[in-house]
Length: 448
Image (cartoon, rainbow, N blue to C red; front, side, top):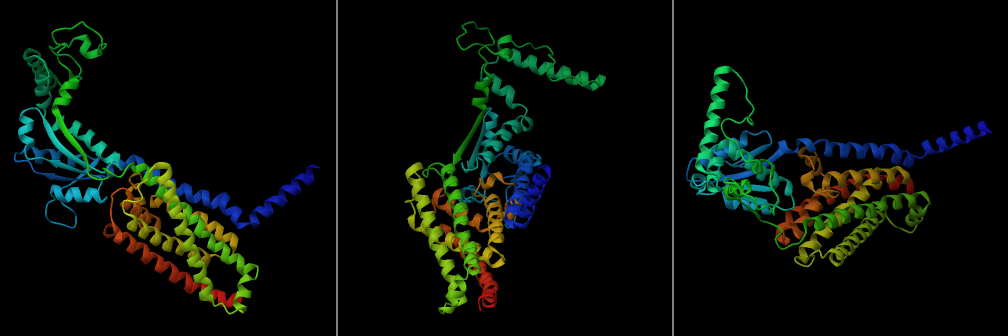
């Protein structure tokens, strides 16, 4: 009995290893996806180092240039006052245009009265942001709050005075700092910053107090929250997506629609190879159908199927989530058509390089999942490290997603998505040409 069981187990393993699709789905596809997702998320800890922000200094005093210089010294951020391809400095108009077009996620404007504001204890700055990428603007805002205390050490005492701390307490604080510096210098000791030197804060300032507490002390009029609020006059402005709804909805609908359209049109590879296996292709050849006619009939069938699927998914997004698909209908239709052309080209290419139906299914799953991950269909591109994004730019999924997001999120009309459509059309032409050259010779050989 045990021997028969082991014999049957061996039989099942032989069947498994003889099936390339089963082996691919069991080992190859997971390995590829682990590689892709590992590259994406292993770089998440380095995302801060890749943070780039465009900046313009309009300050009439010396303080603005000092802030940008000190920010650029940080490891976590890179400040660009010029584009790499341009020798002229950026201005607020160009920064706004680049953030609005999606070329950059955030911009920093140091206004004309920045130095004058510092004299009054106020940090006056403007952050231009694309809300689709909340990470960059949020980190920039946090870095600004941290850096100003280092660059302008007199800000905090000034803010304390404005918020109610009495002058004697401030003098004691400054005197305590002088004592600490003298002790460290003359005795070679590193004293902790928290060590009191002549100034003791009330317990309620250190431990906090209940909102309904009525007990007050002479120093309770000072509020650190008020000090920060009065000091940081940093305004954040969303320069894109103001009237286009939720960016997450646009990303989800477009991304999933593109990914599952790839699965639908990718089925043409298996369909074509199935017809060749069961003799349908030979019978069509007897009826006078040329290899080119057979190939292009499959291709345009996939184009119509994929386009129809995208239209239905967009309508579904409109009904369920209120996705605004009618703001620029002609631009949206153009992106749908170009996306269908190139994704169908992917399906035809899979058919050309596959030697069997099973092999086509394996190629289809691997390519579609990998392209969807690095191309921005599975999750927003700002979550993907720069190195991985550079690979994504070579995939049609990336350009299809850019086209859809230009329409939905950036409210671009036909003129605003022509570049993406041109890239998609070029990719489609390249894929179809390569596929036809490979497959026509193969069809003549196998079908006669």
